[in-house]
Length: 261
Image (cartoon, rainbow, N blue to C red; front, top):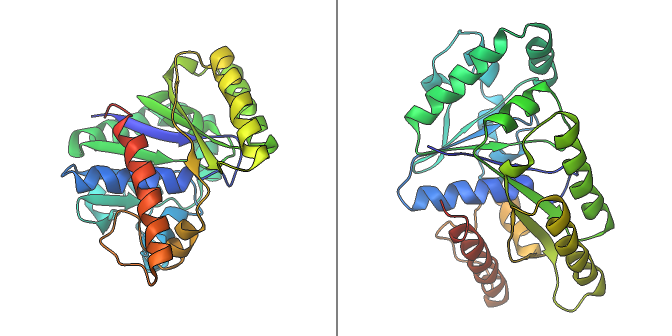
């Protein structure tokens, strides 16, 4: 089944939030979903309120599976029904191993293929930095969604992402969607940024679909501080916050349903 990634050479644009909520959305539809955190900060665990899994044991990281010390069942955390997470310990060291011992790349690809057989969807969460691990996992991805913050630095991140793909010879046509974030209908800066992004997408990723922009909603941060997803059955403490939560859930549902999954 498909391997789906979110990526951008810019931090803080919402990659982890989007891939996490996409996983929950797909799981709620009855699919079994695995999210591999290729970012050893493992922030996705905090979004779903299962951060204790990061620290409760020191022998259940992805690297232990990579070296053959454990089985897949030993390292997965069920964050929601049908939705599972895997954490990483030191991706820099893993990338160094993949660089110096090229035969290890076959091992990594075999593990990901095994995941594809076990789950309906495999999703990968990346840091904004690049590494050999990043290159291989992006190369394995069937769909890559580039997440772009609607400001000057966010647009730079989009261009830097395209340049990175060119430099390491990744297939740009595997970028299936460009997802703008941080939108506000009456603020000048995000609207100007969206106009520029539309022009850049036509030039640099003409085969990618530019999705409707996702609004900048503080309610998401409030939910994440509680370990609650927008796709949880959860009642907000006030009608105002509930309205905002319903609005962002509607936006995300619209974007996710348009991905053709």
